[in-house]
Length: 197
Image (cartoon, rainbow, N blue to C red; front, side, top):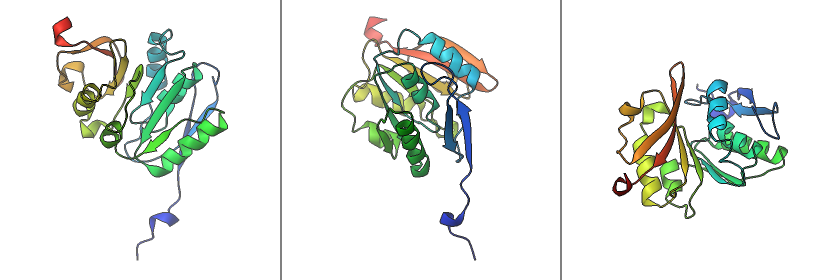
């Protein structure tokens, strides 16, 4: 007879916040399928790029997982971060972490595409790090434009397991900076409508 999922042991892991007010604090997360936090080296590079773009800004961690990217942004004085996470247990863990850190923020549970359809206010900085196998980069980017969730000065961070040209994004999406650690590719991106190119 199979054991129910409720009797299975929950495994947790942790990482350290790299910078800001919570530097060196421990972020604990549940180990679930497809959850692979952004490597420290890539996170450090990303937030060096964004060091003058985070303070007071509205952020979105679209596939939150551990929440490392959004929490790192809040640590560096982002005004707000909306987290989206499909795994209910991990979402609850992240909500508890944010409360413990003294900065509770919305953690929306469910499918990213569906939940983005419900958002009405544009974001200044978006972290887009979906499970690689889902190939969600293009559908999410299209939805961000359709729902007017980005503006002319928005920054979008895209993480992938492939080179920029293999993501298949339209020409309006421009990779301004890029980094790599092993198989992880990170891109800092602007959406520049074709008529302005």
